[in-house]
Length: 215
Image 1 (cartoon, helix red, strand yellow):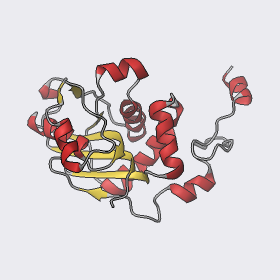
Image 2 (cartoon, rainbow, N blue to C red):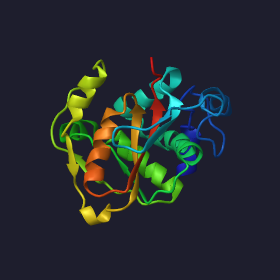
Image 3 (tube, one colour):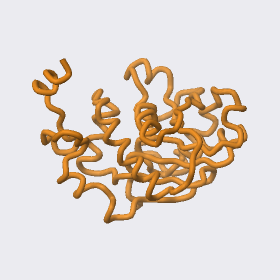
Image 4 (spheres, one colour):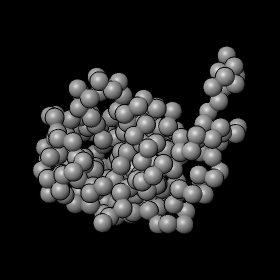
């Protein structure tokens, strides 16, 4: 049945729509075009996270692919996006981790969308890194959409919006990798890291599928 489905609906590159070959997750042309082997991705330190990196720039076809994952139920995009996140972890963060977690979404969005794109990315990424994936945080209140907010508004928007949802013993003294879809100002990641550090986490590293270029 899987072979028949693949024949009828061949997998296509999430960036250009080209039919993929066996074992391909992104076509070779797009790998050369968008993977940041030649352009340094953002790697930075935040107020509470120790280091953050991204695998792609948030623009053009990458932007459309992430919108597909987030808003158009293209859950199959999670795996190829996680593949470039794994590249960023290995080549840019270059630190050992104990487990992978993800930025939570609110209950209403989860009911409406049916999934949390950050969790999909985290679970694929954890498998690639051969690490456990553990939900560690939950969202405690609604927040405004981040798009269009100034950096200080973004920080205020997420302040106190998360809390630990797992036993503190399961994260204490651990090195945790937090996954999310897009890195902009880092406010969401920083607030997530603040709560994890409060619970006794030793180091918080972050990785996103894509990063916005700083103006």
